[in-house]
Image (cartoon, rainbow, N blue to C red; front, side):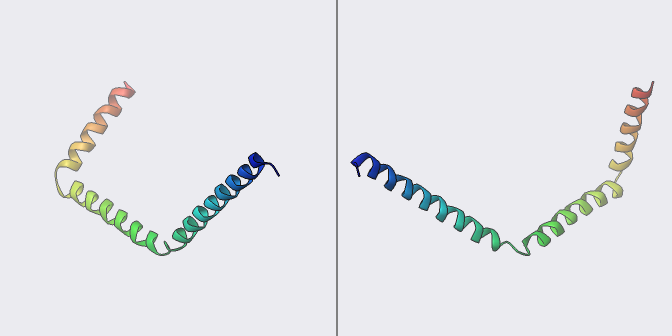
Length: 77
């Protein structure tokens, strides 16, 4: 076996093993994320509820409605 062929074979083996180890580690980290998404969804829902309450509890909601209605009427005419 020539030196060039041996070097290429060794370099290929190192790269394949590195890719395999990286992929395996990523899959293991991904498996540990169970249950996390439920908490994230709950956080998003809480933020949306807070925004809706802020809009309905102040005059901002009617201001937004009036602006949107005016823009829709402008497009319609």
